[in-house]
Length: 143
Image (cartoon, rainbow, N blue to C red; front, side):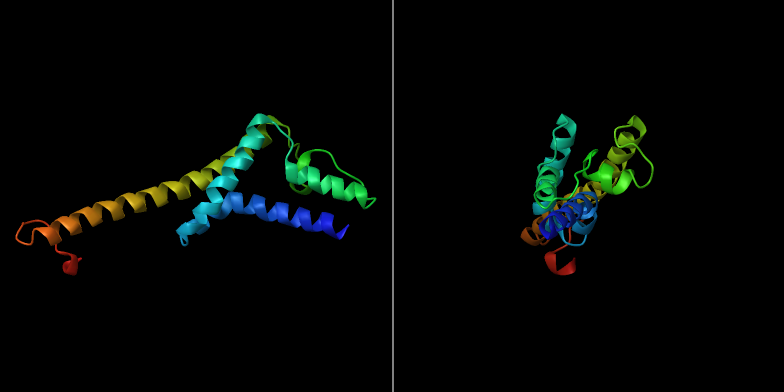
């Protein structure tokens, strides 16, 4: 029983990280090394309509502990059913994807903009350091 609950907590952490990991990466960009593959895996499982392997593991552990299973998947059982929402309804699905893609899209856009600006500034700084007398470009010490 304890193991089933631990898997449920781990599942919740994975879902929350998928939703907010890109926002955390604004502060710690290396988190993208974990966030991107996790998010793509979760998105892929949802888009093809496959059962989540973590939910399957939790249900199997619950059955072995003599606990009842549940229908509707992890989010349906722990989030949407208590709120009175049907996880399979079109509006709920649109809401799920809007929140997930909106938060991540915004954060990834900010991260891409930062990387582009950093790369552009680096090129100007390197060019200015290589050609000290060139007008309009700063040397590395001046940036």
